[in-house]
Amino acid sequence: MEKVTAPTLIKMKQEGRKITVLTAYSYSMARLLDEAQIPVLLVGDSCGMVEAGSDSTLPVTVDEIIYHTRSVARACKSALVVADMPFMSYEVSAEEAVKNAGRLVKEGGAEAVKLEGGSKKSIEAIEAIVEAGIPVMGHLGLTPQSVLKLGGYKVQGRGDDAGTAMVEEARAVEAAGSFSVVLECVPEALAKRITEELTIPTIGIGAGISCDGQVLVINDILGLDATVRLPKFVKKYAELSEVILKAASDFKEDVESGIFPAKEHSY
Ligand code: KIV
Image 1 (tube, rainbow, N blue to C red):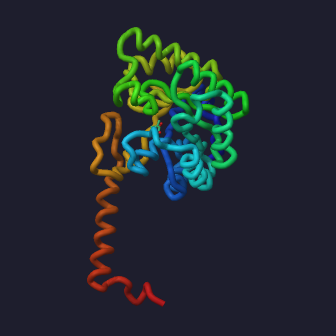
Image 2: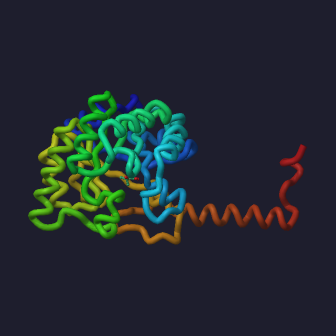
Image 3: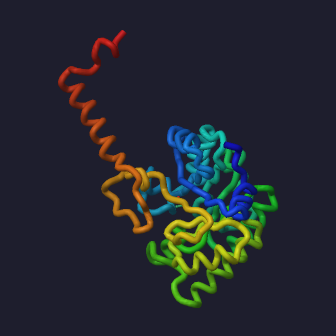
């Protein structure tokens, strides 16, 4: 597979080819996903929840995203590596936004960054980062970094006024120079309208079938944590928690009963 770049995604939309995006946080997982020819790997700040056990993405730092991005970037031959800009890494000023986006590229090996929101601040940050030569993926709808303001993780853009406001935000994100935009937890009809209005691809998560692409969190589709209640929009493709639990307890049993290590595992 040819190396995927930010312009590749725009070309895929023009050609009507759907775009698959998965999150990745580690070298071992990214190596498999790149081998599976997933075109875009997102080092999401969801790592704070699914990998570090936080109850929101708010505590995630730029240094943590750099660490995960470096691991993912080392594994990727063809996938485009997009690093999330964590909470408070782009809101204070456009200058700080460029500095932090630059760190994700320089120190992490990211090939694009993603940031949330369609506010004036977010749009200024997108413009400044793109101006600095770094491709930006926008993120509208349910923006988890605004969970305190939104009052929870809920569908966004319901009703005419909220829908029109999101279309305006999407236009602004495109005009600011973004190469794509994530639409999270948005009514299907609104996501369709935005997808038809924009020339850049929309990547849906809980936003229906009409988006140009789809993104899900890798831990969710693999069923890595049976204790979490997954959102309605997730489709599980495996139950790896069962496989891992069995492997770990089989190992424990072998150690305790003296079966492991056998002759072939010893020098
Ligand atoms: O942090 C993340 O993983 C994300 C995706 C779910 C879009 O933002």
